Every structure is written in C-alpha cells, then in structure tokens.
Image (cartoon, rainbow over all chains, first blue to last red; front, side, top):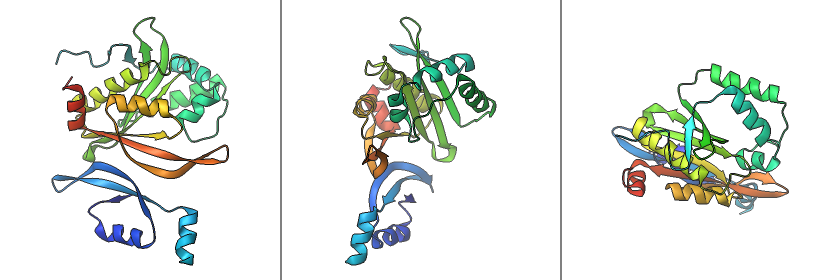
Length: 53
Length: 187
C-alpha cells in the first residue's frame, strides 16, 4: 500500500515488477487535498519470469 | 433532515443484542457457504457459548471506530444479518463496511437496503469522505448488490484466496461522497 504522492516508492516497486492492483481513490487527506492509496502485488510466477529475463 | 437514519424500505438497523446475535451466528455459520462468502478463514463450527464469548468481548471492548448493527426485516421483524462500519482513520474519513445476510434472505434486496442505510449513516452522520469494501470474486450476488448501492470497483488483489485448488481475486470497491450524492439524489 503506497500513497500516490510517494513517487519514489512507486517507481521502486515498478522496477521490481510489482503490478498496480488496487487504487483506493482519494483515501488520504494530506496538505488540504485528497490522494489515492495504491496497492501493489507480485505473483510468484511473475517474480520467477522477471528473474529469468 | 426528517429521515429515520436506521429505517429503510425493507429493513431497519438495530443495536447488537448479544443473545440475538449469538442465535444469529450459531445459525448462520452452520452453513459453510455463509462462512466462505464472509471471510477468508476456514469454515469452522463454534458452540453458541463460543459465539457469545466473542460477541460479548467485542461489545465490551468499546471500540469507538466500530459501528455494528443487526439487520431486521420491517415486514415480519426477522433478524437476518449483521452490518458493520469500521472507520479506519478519522483523519482520512474513510471506512470499511462488512455485511452478512443469512441463508434464505440473500438475493432479495435486504442487504442492498441495509447497505444504503449504512452509507447514509456514513456520509450524513459520520461525515465520511468515502467508504470501502472487499468482496471475493466468486460472490457475484454481493458485487451486484454493492453496485446497486453505488459502489465502483477500484481494483483487485490477484489470486488473494485459495478455494478448492483455484485462486480467486479479492475485489476492492469504493464510493465517494459525491458519487453517493449523485447516486441517491441526496436522499
């Protein structure tokens, strides 16, 4: 689960092959605006495929 | 401002009564399908004494973020289920909702009516900004009901749950205040 404003974490997860699975829209309030909460997942076979690539 | 917040078209929401709730749970969990649609854990049979202990401990814990209700039909005054709203964090004004309707009353609009009541409570009484729920992909009847109440699919955790050798997604659904207003014309 990553807040959408944490762009460094988002790109790190994507680099490791994590896939965005859920986007809880406007689930957080920070600095007077609402932000999505993004869920990532990595399946066993995706991780294996990523390692052999 | 002249609605009874706890009374819908088909059902009303009432306070948790530990005797009645013990009876409801003892009956509902006898049906393993109820358990599978409700939660991830293995279906288990508990004595009514164990159910009562669980319910009484939950009630005694005084959880200010938890808003549990029993669901009764208006016609016939039957106890048919439970619905609860759990405010995850007040600062972000989001809550998770969970609902269980006993066998025989499912698919007849009772759950949808109860959900509408809880959404109205969430948005007009607790002033939340959104409400979230989880549902297993093998529960299309529930998904239809949630869509009728105005929820939208926000994503799916792939292969979240294993049933009979197959993995199924956990679907996330959510409704924002503005969407709720539009869906219900502010009622």
